[in-house]
Length: 306
Image 1: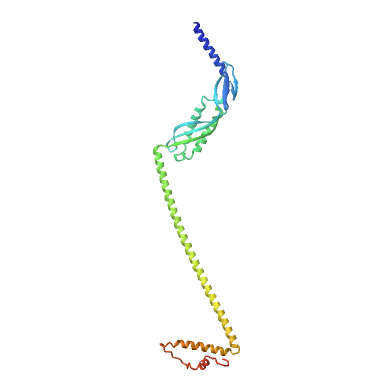
Image 2: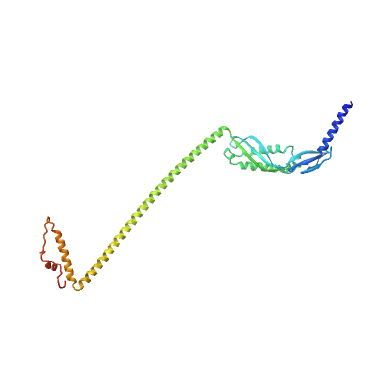
């Protein structure tokens, strides 16, 4: 009997020591301890050193105030066009009021997950399958809006919600892949046709520019040739005029007519000598031995005036 009493007292003393030891609490940063006194909420312990009253005060809840991510399990949703898709997501939120998070709802994490799932199903039900992949922001915004409405009562701050995956059935995925393949083929054909079109346009533009350049070159060539001929004619005209002026001046000078007659006689004799090649018979209407008579027939005397 004495041994049994010793064991009982030992257990009581040990329990008392444990209770006294648990009355000393060190609260870490970004944490909050909810203390109940005799079963009623008493206070919230902030980071630091705290001493509680044994057997009277009790730490009922420990809340982590850091931002946390909560996985939303995959669920089956029906789109507006009655296609079943599997959708999951992730919630980012943080506890801002430890007392409300402890007493406002039994399990705020489970409640947030359930609310996110129901909201996601309702939003997906208003969208067609093709739009569900484009309207992720709309789904996320609606879930955040609904969670924000209860965040004050639950002591939470909902930061954002992200849709992770939207998985359609295998048959729908195959049809979408075939559709995308056909779309890629169509774009490839369009790109090829556009390339050929641009190539033909560039080729025709090149030929047109080549023809224009060639015609411009031919035009400039003719202009240059015409200008060259005009310059040649002008030069010949100036030379002829100058020669006539000099000839006139030479004739009007003393002895000019005699020099001219001599020069013409030499030219005539040279041309006549060129005709006598021994193979061609030439008929002359004058006696070439009488140069004076020939010159007088041309209107030139050896002495005197014409």
